[in-house]
Image (cartoon, rainbow, N blue to C red):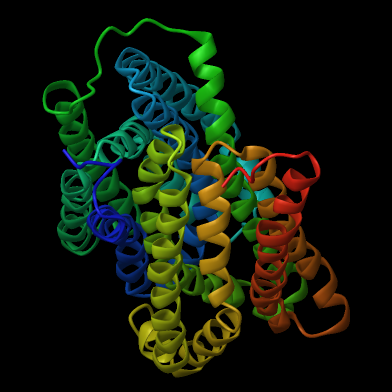
Length: 450
């Protein structure tokens, strides 16, 4: 087990962040491989691709429950571990499992009756709905396995078992990669085959995660006595990642609806373009989520132990990793967009549209490293009152851009909403983190919380 309190900061960050980053690559494989394979289905490939893009925001909102309980619960667990209160840390793990299971079942039962209304509200057309409905219905059946696997994996990583956390995700992702072509092309199940492959892969991953948390983790799933006070602590801290997932997908729904509305005859084509842009954007952002998620337990533990100087050092190392990855992805976006699009469709006109959209999307991408490091750092310290407004501001700028741009410029300029929000959001976060919040504490005669 890693020594969170006395081990070298750089080594700890590296050992926790890198496996968590690769675990997020595994999560990306689920979605990206599905889209690559269905995009190459003869005749109906673009329809399937656009339909999965339509389903993605709804499914991501659902899996945001895993972040709600996983991030919140793992943070509370490590705050207690830092205070050397093992009994409470144990109670948090058990209550997180109960809460996650309950919310997973409720989410599935609520979504199934309203799937038609939701898909049309999120941008489906009469042509795309049958494809989206087929994929969405099958995917929902694996909700419990998906959320338990993703949510409880935060507790594996939070206890320092970074490699095991990475393995649980990669196991499912590689299985999905193998099953996709079998179900889609050999069994001729088309887009439904991609959904079946994903559900089966999530079941296997869930079995591994629960086995580890029941038998091998230091703090296991035992003595499951529900406690509403613990539930509140979990939900309070987990509210930020859940809110961010919700808002990310809300603005994506707004983006899809605007592309459909203002794109005219190009509406369905722009949705297919956006599905590929989203895939590239996930490759660029989810590994950074892995970096910050993998190190949140380290921040929480040291903050709970009163080691604020170590917290500052951790944040700096995390920013270096996120910043370096951002620069790499900017280079890939400007140099490899066409080749990436070609994985999904061989039409050169379509690939050119995707490549241009990707380049636009990544103009201000370095701001994402600032936002993830500082906002998630505040969340790991339990300072939700600061973290939530900073995140909300960035989403507000994104949504405002989506609403205003098509009234003055062609539909394609909607892709500029991302860099506008990245640049303005990061600037505001830097100002608040280094100027406004320290000034607030100084005025009250207190030391800055971080």
